[in-house]
Amino acid sequence: KGKCPMHHSNGEDSQEYHYEIRIVLPSTSPAQEAIDLLRTAGNELLPRGPAHVTLGEFSCTSRDETQRLTQLADFCSGLHPATFYVHGRARCRRGRKPAYFLPVDLSTAAEEVVEELQKLSFLDRTKVKFHVSVGRQEVPEIQAWDGTMDQLTVLKLDGKKTRNFVESWDFRFGVDADPLEKKLRVCLKK
Image (cartoon, rainbow, N blue to C red; front, side, top):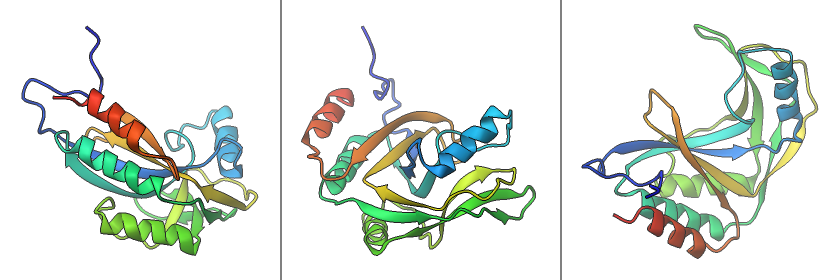
């Protein structure tokens, strides 16, 4: 029989997972096009996956996963799209290894979404500044861009330190959460 990738058995039902909430930028955004150009040139010091803004992270056990994801889907179903602004000039974060990023400004409506996520305990820390990571190589200045946050993407990771990707979900704004809840209940039925 086929086994649902989200289902856990053999005493693993209480395993803790880590979840990251992102705004994923469209493939046509200047930031994604700049990363694609570097990737085509063979640059290996680039962020994994598509260009994105990380809003924050939370943890929960696999036993609580259905409830938490359904809660998040329900929250997103009541939201309207909000805007954000991605700067075109990359800045450098100095550390052991330099890391480059494009600063992001959230609109008031987008900031309110983040504040509500914090109140619902979906963000484990309060972030004041947001950005799009572009890796460890400086990128040329790109076109600044106004983006629309109309969904949240949640990445399930196997741990806070290992951060191996397990699964992901897209929660679109203004969409009834019931179909997702049914899907999750079927998939996670113990």
